[in-house]
Length: 162
Length: 146
Image (cartoon, rainbow over all chains, first blue to last red; front, side, top):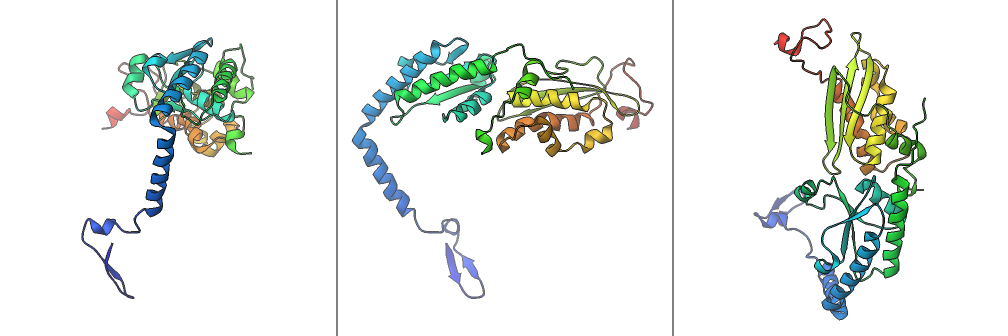
């Protein structure tokens, strides 16, 4: 915020007002109101229920895959998330590969580096579901993980000698 | 085609990942260094043995991390053996990305450049020998100079 503006220059308001310039976020406030109305209309309970169902579905599907290990509790003790590791594939290679299937996941420590260290894992991949995700998309994730596991599995490749 | 649609896991990349060149520890290295990418957790260690006239006689790497970081380290140590120190120092980041091959997005370029960064610092990081068994290059050691 300014104090005075002239054609030669300006002076600022005193702290903290000098750093609080600009129009208040009116559009954002209206948008937030619309968003909370939208979410309330669906219902937080319904969202939570759906998240748990689809999360449990994906968890089950991934758990069955050979060479894939689910990290974290069983579905009844968590919401719509599934963290996993694949033998011989690093979390960042998994997430980059899933990206080519149009699937966005998070890879890394997920802000829990000491936990990963205690589990003896360098990183994990985490898929998170919300009410706009479909069961068909969970199937696509499971199929993609299957293909990625195969892609990075040791296959007796040999480096080309120069 | 954007880089993310491009297949960065080309066959020769996966070959280096599964069948790396000189992965492990080198006996009696003259120089070594280690580095990591804190965000990804990639780690690369490089051991070098330089000849008295400043050529890389042997280069070895070890580490842990994604395909990009480990395969690129293998490609780099393979490429650098036999090179002079001046050639190593002149080997640019762009040349490293070119050596790797597939075009990478900036976040994955960090993985590819990790080994390059470690190599560039390793040539300035002589291994301190507690005894006289190590190779001698005629010049005074750092401790003798001070």
